[in-house]
Every structure is written in structure tokens, then in C-alpha cells.
Length: 220
Length: 248
Image (cartoon, rainbow over all chains, first blue to last red; front, side, top):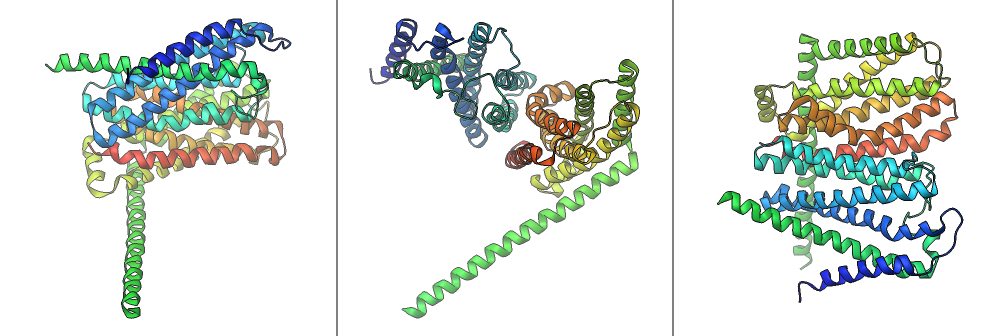
């Protein structure tokens, strides 16, 4: 029970946001109409992705000094889990864009840069596949991961500010803008973020444990 | 009591002075190594003249191919975009030589002689010089061939080109080191460097577009500052990470 409370919390929160997000009242805004409910699903994906990629960089730095295989597996599995959330964020965003902006891909800077930052992590995974020797792979991919992370921060948080975006809250924090000033939406939005971040972390721990067992079997 | 505390402070001052002396010595040593390594690079290049001539021919043939296929560029945005695409590929080819081309023996030579920081700095500086020569000649040839349009603010355009050479060499030097250690040359270099260089390229194209539109300089300070910050960031992370990569 001690170890599973956060998993229960995550499940409860996500189930709650799925029900409340679809049923609770939302402000009626022009163009957006009911699609505003997508805020509860689209934005938390990005938060979960950023948290998972940060975990990955943390373990990459750690593996550079500790040279332990466990840290390397943690780094790569959090990238794997993060990419799932990044792709889901792109898909939910594209669907939302279709109904509000008219096209799935609207040449919006944030959309483009998010896609590029996912490319960055695909490149990381391909770099890993290119190297056979395990220790060398751990070292070189950790270096690339740490090298690429500041660029991802620039891509996702700095560059969109310099450009006109179709996204709301230009110049402000993208998640906390005029949309969820409505207190009813806050009641769902914040739990949704926390819930999806925890779910993301859960996915990562499961992936890590599976990979760890596979690794042990290989060595034996 | 006073005498003792006096003595302690003098000892501390002494230690402090030694520390400063040591760090000055370290910096001077680094500068010496960097100077030596750059000299070595230039000497090797002057003997073989392979990289500079090869990349120059590459750029000129690319521009000429573009000229033959486009004939003339009516739109100034296309003019700008095409130049940067050509520069991107040319610089990937030019800079990737720095680590990928080196033999095991050459790497061992600089490994024994110099600190990792000196190796990285010297390569970056050398690549920047190489890129400056290359981009200047490329820009000249490009404006010569596609003469339907010339940017009204050529100075600002050249500033963008210089910043471009610096950023390309800071990013690609580190990526080519990673790709060469991964032991899987050309394709890996392209895959790894594209996502990293795209944000820089977007800033560069925006800056160059300001020059193409002939906007006053005040409008471009944001981009110039941003590019400088990104470069400092890249050099700092490279310097932190390179020692781990260099040690095999």
C-alpha cells in the first residue's frame, strides 16, 4: 500500500478527469465551443512528456559519472515513455487544430517545434541502435541526450515566444492563459496534469522493470 | 591572539594567491595548447588542401545546379531560403570532416598532447575560420549567379552569414565528435545534427529575412542576441561533455 498509493491516485485522477472533462460545464467561447474540453487531454500530454524527458536527462548525467547500466536503461526507457506522450500530444493537438483552425497541420510554430523536438529523441534512439558495444552506447547516447536537452528547451519554451502563434497565451505560459481562468476548468485541468504525469511515470517504471528483467535474463 | 589570526589571514591570502596563479597558469596552458592545435590543423590543411577545396567545389557545384534548375529566382523569400539550405548541407559536409576524417593515430596524438577542452576549442575555432571563408565565397558566388535580387541591407545579411558560420561550427563540431565515436559516419551525422540545428536555422533565416526586407537594425537585435545566447549555451554544454566523449 505504501508503494502503490500514487498509482491509485493517478488512476483515480485520470478517470475523474475523463468523466468530469466530458460532463462538467465549460465556458462557451466562439470558435472553440465544446472543443475546449480537449485542454484536459492535450496539454497534460506535453507536461508528462517534459517531465519524462527531464528524468531521462537526469539519469543520463548520472550514468556519465556512475557508468552504471541501470541508469542508462532508466534514461532510455524514460525517453521511450516520453515519446509516447509526445506523439499523443501531437495527435490530440492536430485533431483540435482541425476543428478550430481548419487544418490538421496549420504551420503553427508550436506545432512545428514540438514535432522537431520529438525528432530529436528519435535521433537519440537511432544513435543507440547504431552502436553495438553496451558501455560505449551508454556513454555516447548519454552525451547526445544532455547535449540535445538545452536545444529542446529552446525549441519548446523560447522560440515560440519570438513568433506569432495560433496557440493562445502568446507571451504567457501556454497552459495558464485566459482559457482556464474559469474556476470550473481549473478543477479539472490541474488534476488532469498531475494524473497524466503520474501515469507517465508509471509507464516509465513498468518499462524500466521489464527491460531490467530482460537484461538479467540475457546475462545469465 | 591577534598575531595568530593575522598569520591565518596571511596564509589564506597566500593560498588564494596560489589558487589564482594556478588558474591563470591553467588558462595560459590551455591557450598555448589551443594555439598549437589550430596551427597543426592549418598546417595539415595547407599541405593537403583537401577540405577547403573539396567543400568549395561542393558549394559551387550545388549553387550551379540550383541555377541550372531554377534559372532565376523571382521571389526574395525563395532566394533567402535556397541560400540557407545550400549553406546547411555544405557546412555539414565541411565541418563533419573535422573528427570523422581523423585517423586513430591523429586522435591519439592530440589526446596525448592536449587537454580535451583544448582539442574541442581548437577544432571549433578552426571550423569557424573554415566556414567563414566558405560562406563568404559562397555568398559572393550566389549573388553573382542569382542576380535577380540582392538584399538591400548587405551588411546585416553578412552579419547573419557570419553568425551562421559560427553556429554551424559550434553545433556540428560536437555532433561530428559524437558521430565519429559512434563509428558510423555520414548518415548518423546528418540525423543527429538536423534536429539540433533547425532552431538555429530558423533564427538565422528570420535574421536574414530582416536583411532581405531591408528592415532597420533595431528589429534584428532580438535574433542576434538569441543566436549569441544559443551559441554560448552550445559551447558550454560541449565543453562540459566533451571530456567524457574524448576519453575512451
